[in-house]
Image (cartoon, rainbow, N blue to C red):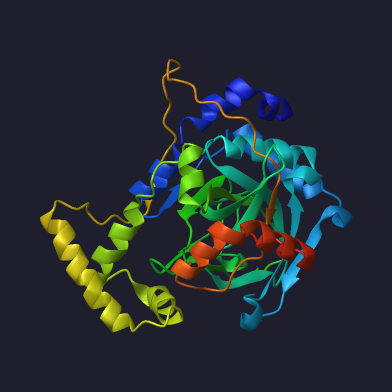
Length: 340
């Protein structure tokens, strides 16, 4: 199956089944896709990750320290550029949202490994072909689970606090969601390794730069779903309150504001609130128009952030003015990537 991953026409035809951003937004911010890779490819990736030597896995860990914007976590990871099969799998995943920059890794969770509650929001720098550095935000996260016959009793669940749901890491199932989204990974309880591929699709933080690169304006069904959930008194959950409080806002007052916004949107014909959707792969016609884009330059990503409501106006202005200086400082401090 190594040949399949290296066969661009076949991989591109497979990727066309999953217009990822559309699926995520139709699902209210999260989509769950079973039977993600062709089964022989998923089997091959499973065996490949099991055979990666212990010394090749990087111990990715941190203690909780909110003053440094870090949350407690531990797992092992291998960056895409560090292993040829992981790199080929990352190229395949990149075709799911070809206009985006991206960064992917393989992950292995052993007993007690976990990630505390976080929202994945982070800033990253992308080095362009001309040597310039472009500041980007994580836009969409994706995880592909590659452990066979995993059960809830073995832990390692993806907890989605937006909808108060737990997801068992089922073999060859992908979960993608908009960032930020409050979630966590529960401790692994068994003796088997929990294997996955994970990463992010990145969007330029500067709206002008995003527009110049062909990114469409940000219109997310997730925002509508959140507002309607708050207005109806369901679906907000503890995670929504954490985000409001972390922004220094009274959750009750925030809910009242959302109710007013929702009523106005409903009067204008707003979208219906949708729970996350679970889809089966659909075959596209061979005649579909192809979309091509040069492979993005390597990405250096920032550390995973503690839960927050999102960037402030001041932070956005800072990004636009001094992103290069900020990225230089972050690289000097050293960066780590966190996974799912």
